[in-house]
Amino acid sequence: FEIWSFEMMVLLSGLLPNPKLETSVLSISLNTCSLVFMIPLGLSGSISTRVSNELGAGRPRAARLAIYVSLMMVAMEGLLAGTLMIFCRRAWGYLYSTEEEIVNYVGDMLVLIATSHLIDGIQSVLSGIARGCGWQKIGAVINLGAYYLLGIPVAVFLAFVCHFGGKGLWDGDYSCTLCASIVTCDPNRMYRLGERGKESH
Image 1 (cartoon, rainbow, N blue to C red):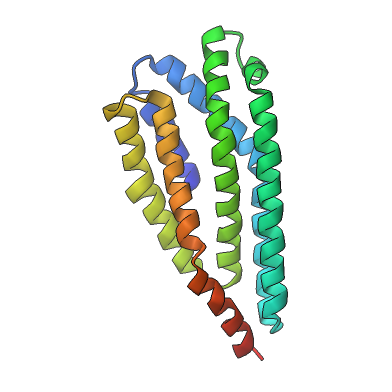
Image 2: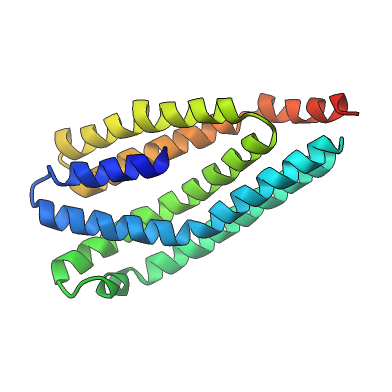
């Protein structure tokens, strides 16, 4: 769902004033986001496997410990990667272009990317936890609703009605990631993790 919404964002950027600049900057931003997202993506796959194995073996406490460790790891990675992006923001754009306008805009966008990377990483790990617990349908419904019923409409509103341009598209798309993270991290559902482990004995 997330990749499709990113592609939709690039297409929508072509409708903004100065589409050449907006499309170039959003493409660079998405490329950067994809690069740093590989670590949370790996953690997501790992925690999914670990949680499913621990629950299958009837060890809910071990599954819960793995969840806490993975969330701590992805939060630390998000803070570290975000800090590096903010410190390198004025130079990063030169890897892609020599035009000052694009480089400066990419520098501004990297602050948003750094913040959204932390949220996106946590959401990715939470989705892995949901898959490991056998909540694939719940995760699919949450992500579908968040990205297409919330994210894209908010992105369009911020970009075209509030005239925030590419930054509005980015903020709108990441509002859905924040929403999906909050909904996925339901304490009642996490509590039922222990009940599932007891049932498997």
